[in-house]
Amino acid sequence: MEANFVKALREFFRLWFPPVEPPGEEDVIAIHSHRMPIHYRRHARARNYVLRLHPDKTVLVTIPRHGTRKFAREFVASRKNWLEKQWRILEARRAPPQVLRPGMEILLGGRPVALELRRNGEDWELQCGPERAPVRDPDGNLRPALENHLRSAARIQLARRVRELAQAHPSEVKHVVVRNQKSRWGSCSRKGTLSLNWRLIQLPDSVRDYIIIHELMHLRELNHSPRFWQEVEKACPDYRAAEDWLKRNSGQVGF
Ligand SMILES: [Zn+2]
Image (tube, rainbow, N blue to C red; front, side, top):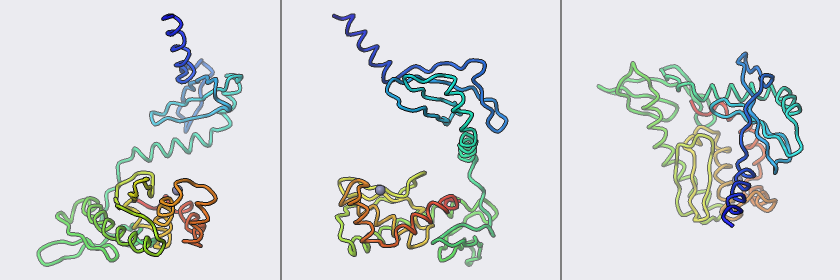
């Protein structure tokens, strides 16, 4: 009885957490001239070969039930460009944030604006489009002052814009939270909390509005069904242009 149970448990783990097979001598791929070993994992439930480059730069291929290592190797070779692109993304993520100095530009409201230092009596002030932030050390990195200021400006501006749009397109918003999210523009919860990325203030107004409307419509339809997109289109007829802008320009946002 107990032995059966242990066997079943082992089987369960093998199925859900299949072991990683170590690479053999031929299992190597050159990514930007780094020779990286290819690790494999056999997965009884996998339907396709799946390639991943993990944050620690491990190359891992999932092999479906009747798949072979030989095909997996070819599959990895055919995805070399993709791997090199992912590699560059990982490298960029690890780069320390750039030091900001006067004269540099950032995106604000969809337009590039220059960072300018001005005297304000005894003190220094950073001007960036319509925004002004006090600066303690004018010779140092302007980033902390700028980020601090833009985050609190975003908290006020975005909450106000959510209220306006929730009135125009009746929605049950209970709270608005403005956060420092790395990879999302916004999200919402069943309880009516809208979470927005403070960097929304960097986008053109129409794109910012689309993202807010998108989340508001999720309060009506918590999915991406055709019904959801109908609601989005009714509230924001130009939403495709906004999606397009995001696809082309998201990389410029942030600084
Ligand atoms: Zn959505």
